[in-house]
Image (cartoon, rainbow, N blue to C red):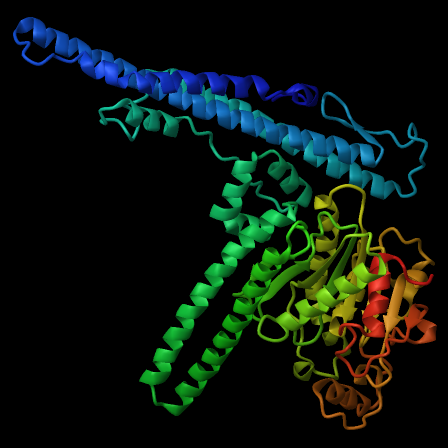
Length: 572
């Protein structure tokens, strides 16, 4: 396996030059094919000498076919290797830059050395330093392993081409011209694709991805989208491309399902069975309609991006087969944005219920952040990678049950926030996590139990965030005791989620609250203390909205405040 020092000196240019020379030689050989044909027996020449000349001409043609196959295969493998070396160099450069940014150095043997003392900085958190060093080491190891695989594969292909009968041993053998021989040799000159690592570490995935050539990256995204769409560590634009392919597949399958169910409705008159099929048909039609609107929004935003290719909607993940459907959509590119926000929607959110509305909310927040800081780029992610609860189905006598969905979501949200740092380009972004309704519970429970990589948290319309005080939240990079200035809470005066007395609101949330108040003894909290209370210790703002669902509507004081928090322009 090559050392790190050797990889830093790898240079694809000699191979690119060799490809040019091989291409020239191959084209000259193909042009010579007409001359070879003239070596065959001239018209009117007969006898033993003519037959011998014809046999010799055919042998020359066979040798030239083998030569054409060898040249074509060598040209192919040399070009692919040169492109792959470019990828390896990208991986080396990214790892070196990551190390430099965090005051580490990668030695020639691949060891990661902490230069914090030499850089004049004192590590505030030894655990964070160890974690960062491990991330860099993982990238180094994956890049060196990819380089070793590339070197071995190149040698293996060369040995295969050096062996005799390249042309006749190939699938294309038996053709009778130099071009066909060249195609056969080209097929034998293909490198083995470097498959993704079996684990799901974003750092390892990033190292694998950066070691691929650009053509290989696009081939994976478009031809093997199931391997790329949800893979952390892969840049946003490639995940988007892969997920758009997957989206088309979901739409096609839903169309077929709808037609099948319609036929069942037409063919069956049994009332009980018909009700079941009709309900399934209605859900399928709703999901299909939502996905078609999502596709339209993605395509429209891409068409209108113009000279700003990052200023559009990106599809980061999709699983339409999940119970309520799971989708992650970003308004703006989180890999390049200076300000990145993750928005976690609340109760009953899913593909069928509220998907497009939640994307609109993310867009409203992105627009507000851009208005607050036009010079900064912004991305707001609508994160719906969990099954949001339906409150009417939760037993109000068992308060901890209300955290079940948040408990199931916390690992994914924690990891997602960590992984955003891996693919981000340039200086670290300012990251904000926003929870609406039960989404705030997901954010709070994640922060409480696992910590959350963010600079700011925003809770609006919150039923509680799983803790009694803001200091019980673990926000990465925010010193303990300073959380209050980094947690922002808004609650509309008439939002039923914040009221405990039963007043007959006539909605599911109100019914749950009323049923809890009817218990003896009545619990003081559902999901923790109401975070807008002064005793909670957060920074409270007046949203200037009405009800439970208007916090992210365009041009409201609430969404403007959220935009200021995302952009860092809010009053401290």
